[in-house]
Length: 155
Image (cartoon, rainbow, N blue to C red; front, side, top):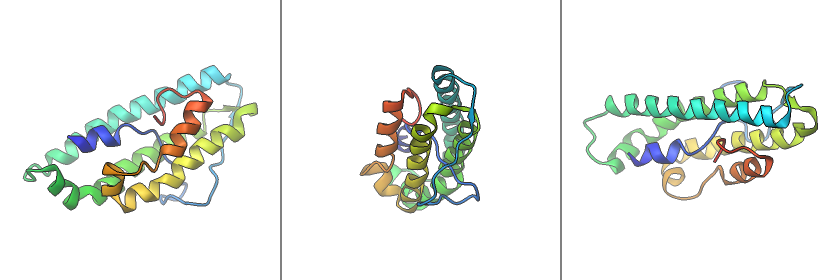
């Protein structure tokens, strides 16, 4: 199940209207959490999201059990999987993280991470084969997330 290993290795995505925007910056809510508390809670959201994504993938793939090879599965269902399962999963996680109450001093850094993820979603959805076997549209987001201190999302 290569698609599972590839897709669950990423964190989150956002869209306020159900479609990822490539230009809009993700607005974040500030609050009273410390950076450590925020990172811990956000990483927990991403970890739960990964587990749910794994479960959803298995259910999705099981319904299409007649497909014998990954390439055939990918060709027939890759775009559908991205649109119906993966992108909404990231969007939901981003929404939850965005509203946690980001430390005021970290607003710009966290917004940059979430915006980079949001901007990567259309590339993953539009070309699942490239996403699964080639360029990582989440590379920028992953780099920003690691630099900020995230350990789960979106690595």
